[in-house]
Amino acid sequence: MLQHAMQKTGQTVRTYVMNPKSMPRIQLLGHIDIDTREWSDGVLTAASRAVVKEPL
Image 1 (cartoon, rainbow, N blue to C red):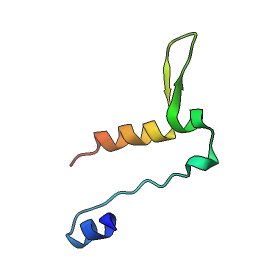
Image 2: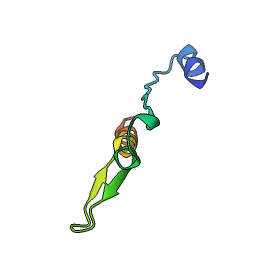
Image 3: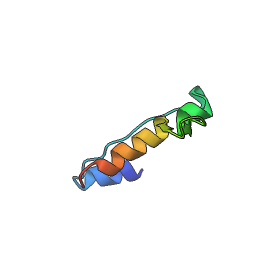
Image 4: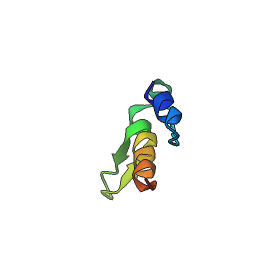
């Protein structure tokens, strides 16, 4: 609904489709390695980072 309204006003809309039930929670959200304390992004967090980097 919001996407259609924004497109009617001439704005470009990018959508990311995800099915959260198709993957384990760790793969969806990401996790931290206990030994190295290194963070690994999941699908949702990687998409969120990509959206933040997009120009307005």
